[in-house]
Image (cartoon, rainbow, N blue to C red; front, side, top):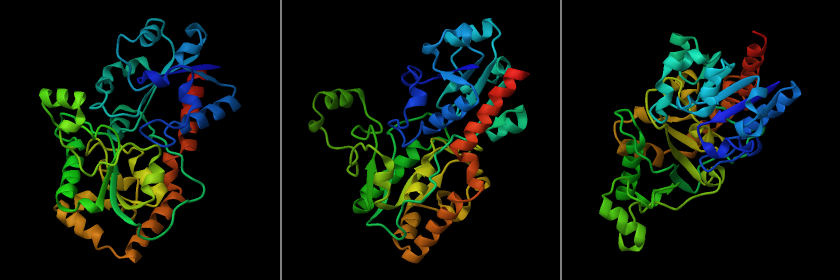
Length: 340
């Protein structure tokens, strides 16, 4: 059985990159679940390809990772030839607007999604973005040398529920009030969050002519886990708030490093992650209040958070986020399409 996987990100939709690489710039082991899926598929006599590696008329099932644009050649081929297809919605529609187009769900035999509302209302199949849960925990217990960090890209989104700007609010607060207690990592922070065209031009020609827009910025990093282990707390905001079931790798990156996440995102996060494992940003009336809480936290209290994290990572509850669960659910969906 031959299955093709098409992704909206062109660089991982060629040469089986999706299945043969573990890391991408935005996350540690972010693609490793796909390697695990490939191995499971192979054991079940299923061959997986990116669209460039096989003639499309030899494909039994087409899997689209996010809703493709309507004029995408592969999507047109599937529709025009009434081919069997599966859709996986892992990103929210405000980031990839095509995911809003539920009218095209009719072209897919099955739709997997993070979106709890669509599971309940449209009969989609619930599937989280997968993470690789370590079999052994590799972090030290106790407060770390450094207080707080965030690892993120400097992005913007025009939506009332976006959290990019809220992340910037916290960064600016630390830079103004407690610079020594905060470090910023990621891409794009050598540019202001908002800037005019003239400033863009000057900065592109000679960055040193303008002041550093984010004094807490420490640069790009290779691996999140190596950095997070030096910090007690990490700001882990999703791209948007109040999307039911939209839980990405951000909170897990902190868990795996033994760093306590300060989380804001899915409004039903407590359906999936125990409250004792993280600091809920919604519980604080101000950034000042949040800072006072983490700055004055006793080591014994911090260790309690870490023990809850460790217990959660060894529990059955976390398994629905695991690469193994993800792989089995997807494999079962593909196999059922081939016999129905």
